Every structure is written in structure tokens, then in C-alpha cells.
Length: 139
Image (cartoon, rainbow, N blue to C red; front, side, top):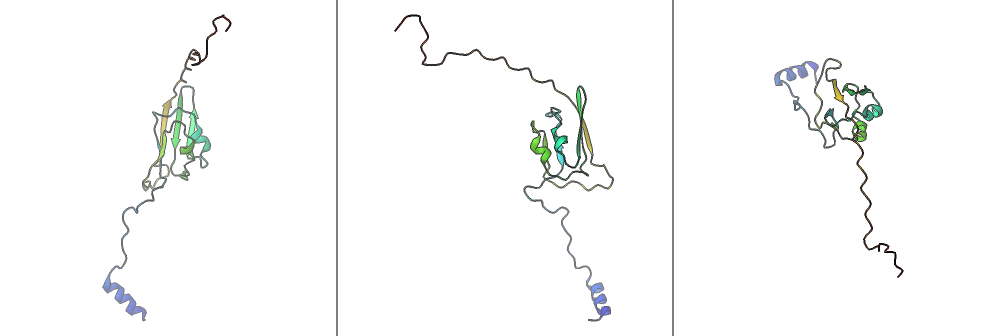
């Protein structure tokens, strides 16, 4: 086939490619951006400790905890979700938005540390059912 003929055919027929949908569907177990609920956080810092890419950073202060997340550094491994005891971290099921500036999606929160709950008082021991109480008389 002659190159000129091929060029003319392409020009006459127009575009022959198909447009992709705006966002292809994700699989059911897709792991997206980390969501943080500051109301449930107790400031333990385990999420920042296990984050291998240092996307999550936490700073302990006396009465508050500063938590920050940079999705640009995140590998979406989910280790932070696994170790979060109060279950305040979740992963989104949709794709992250497109960003053009480094750090545009970065989020920071300051959480007031909650005082530890006081221990519950021990309940008085009750006698076991079916055991005879001593009366002092021989049987």
C-alpha cells in the first residue's frame, strides 16, 4: 500500500479510536485514599509507625495529637487500616482525583487527646451456686 494512499484514507474517514469512559470501574477490593475520622482517634500513633512510605505522620504533644496524610507518598498498602485500634481509618473505594501540584491532596488534623478511661471498680465476689456455706455444726 502506498503511504500517500493510506494518509488520504485516514484523512477522509476521520478518527477511528474510541473514547474511554471518564473513570473505568474499580474492582471490589480497590484501595483508594485513606479517610481519617478525628472524633474516633485516640492519638496512639500506630498508623504513622507502620506506614512504610511515611505518607502518614503523627506528632504527640501534651494535650493534642497532630496527624497528617500525603496521598502523593502513599502506596495504598492498607497497613495503617489494619493496626488502627479505634477503627477511625478507612480507605475510599473510588479513585483519587487528578492533581497537578505536589501536596495538593495533603490533609492535616489536630486531635485533642482523650484522657484514659478510669478503671472500673471490681465487683464483690458472690458465693458459687450449689456450695454449702459453713454453719459450724458437724455433719
